[in-house]
Amino acid sequence: MAMSTNANSLYVGSLITSVIGAALLLFGDFAAWEWWNAYLQVGAKGYLDISFDNMLVAPFLLVAVGSLGFCAYFSYLGIMDNLDENLTRLSIFFAIGSIGIQLGVFIIFALINIIEDNYWWADVGFYGGVIGGALTLGLLYMAQQQRTKGK
Image (cartoon, rainbow, N blue to C red; front, top):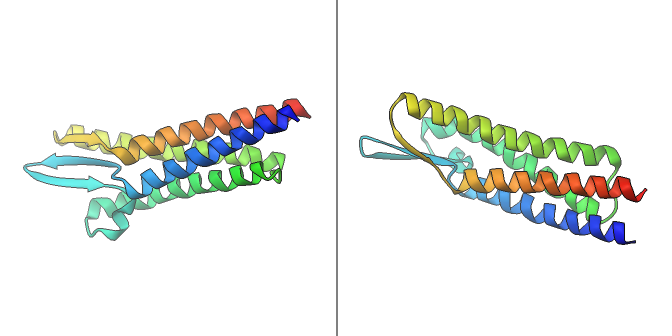
């Protein structure tokens, strides 16, 4: 019983961190740069903007948001004890994929702006998405370990 209660609390934590991470990634700015007094922002909400740079980045970040959304759904299934062992592994891969997409987009963004000699910075969407994804990954992994130890 204690194992199940501990695993459920880990799933609750992963649900919270994945929802917060996805919300910050979706509604916050991912990164921004300044070039000759022109301030530009890049984010997952860029599909609403007309900027060409946002149109290139937004689909990748929306996939990361969707991955965190799947992690939230799998966490919900874990809370209800309806999560299969294969889905537990899949949720961990979704969390890794979300972090990988975000870091890949940010590395490309940083390299382009370093080459162009622009003033650039990471914003709340990057930090919220990566930290939320990392916490979700850790909590899902610990919940999986707790469930396999309890069997």
